[in-house]
Image (cartoon, rainbow over all chains, first blue to last red; front, side):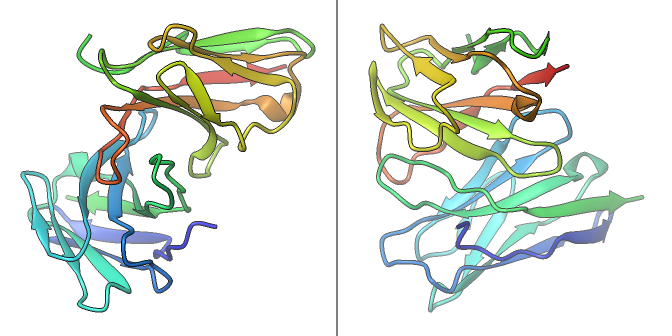
Length: 110
Length: 115
C-alpha cells in the first residue's frame, strides 16, 4: 500500500502558489516524506524530501506538520511547465524502494 | 552520461516474443531499481540491485521476468514469452547510495507494446 492519500486533481493559476496536500497518518518515526513529479511521457523527477523539519530548495518548499501525519508541497510561482502528476511518497524500507500511489494531477492554467 | 539512460525508448513485440530492455545508470551509482508503469497508474516496484547483487525481486510479476546487473553498472530487464498484459512503461532508477535520504534519478523509460 502507498501509505499516502492525495487529492486526485487540482488546478492552479499561472504565477500563483500551488499547494499540494498529502496525508500519511501511519508514517513511522524514521520514514522520510518524498515528493516526485512526472511530466507527460517522462520519468519521475525528484522534487524534495524531509523528515521532520520544513525544507526548501530551488524548486519547492515542503511543510510537514508537527505530528508528521500530513505535509504540503508548495510551488511558490507555478508555471505552465509545472503541469504534471505529483507523487507524495513515504520511504518504506532502507533500500530506497518507492511505493507510488495515484498522485495528484496538477493543471496550471494561464 | 549525465543521467539515467534507457533503451530502446519504444518497443513493439508480438505476443510470445522475448524482449530485453537496457538501463545505463548514472556512473558510480550503487543502487538500481526497475519499475513498471501501466497506463494511468503510478509506477510499481519490480526489483532492486545493490551493485551486482539482486537483493529484492519481490515485485516481478511472474517467472517470465528476469533482471540482471552482472558488473554492477548496466542492467537488463528481460521478459520472456511476452503477453498483452506486459504492455507498460518500464522505468529504471538509480541512487548514489543506500541511505534512507537519497534521491532517485529516473530514466525516461521504455514503452513496451505487446500486440
